[in-house]
Image (tube, rainbow, N blue to C red):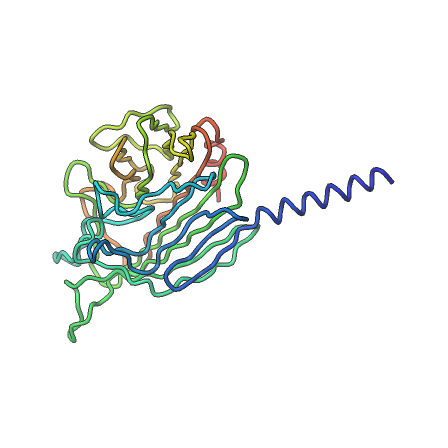
Length: 314
């Protein structure tokens, strides 16, 4: 009888743990909210935001929260007002030889979020799927209306928290709506563009790749499948970090990195090479997949290689 009693107590405790680890999703017109218990996880920004009518942006994640509830991402940072949370954007946007805007600097470019819907998932994950049309005042119909030239379909998936970390998957699918569409990074030796987290940084920030500690330079760092950024960026300057994992199915994998110790984003560079615009098909979507690990402590606090092996085999 005692064994049965202990077994029943164990089941009750397990049920309580499962209930506590439930991810909740609330989709509203302007924003979608992921929470876990009483903890905020992230917010997807569907409606346009601006700073006094300038730097109008949408279709990005902010805030992204640390495990301790503090905000990890930054929006409208004073040094680069066009930076925004976790975002994906490109400087060069061409249809044929006509340049039609700059999604990175948010010049002659805007996102129209057509829909945000819950995407059914296995396990205890929660996800949204968004459909976003890229538009520009430089590309219009004969009647003068802005005409969409790329259809973006993005999946944002949040996993329940594990010991010391949480996983977030982001999958971006780009389909050209016009022939001869091309996108590219910055037109210099840096070639930055694509998937770019803008997170808070302190003086003790440390970058870690599979090969060990990395010292950022002005130009791109050699390619690797993941990069961790850690430091005293948690609540009360506790150690915390963010790891960015690149899926091996991504075009140009493994991608180089643009890394900065302060006042900038961290960028897994795409396209390849960054400064040269590459085609986006109007038949088969270009798909980019990333996984974020939001964690306590340093890179050594998380089994990053194990998580990556599981991720790349999915």
